[in-house]
Length: 113
View 1 (cartoon, rainbow, N blue to C red):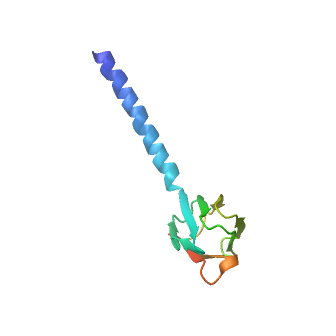
View 2: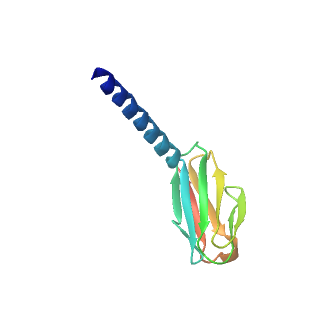
View 3: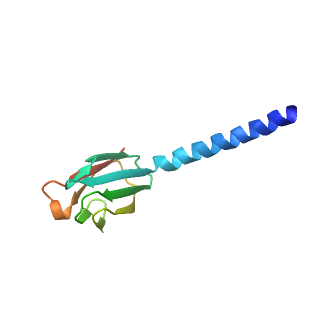
């Protein structure tokens, strides 16, 4: 009986370790959606001093160009497609981005804190 409990405890510890690891990975990834030529959310908060992944999903049928002089990133995302960019590590502050094909509506910022 003790051996079964030990094996069960080891399995539980393994499951908890994997679950924690997955949460840490997920915390380093952020989703930005382009919909109706706007970014949702328009503001993303990330930890300062840490490299993160930014996945941009263009849900519109037309392409959009993610452009940011502040982040030094520029990428065309075709309609219905996703791209993933690495950003950071960034100093604490605000970093603007826009959709270059729809500048009037597609605006946002990354806040590193």
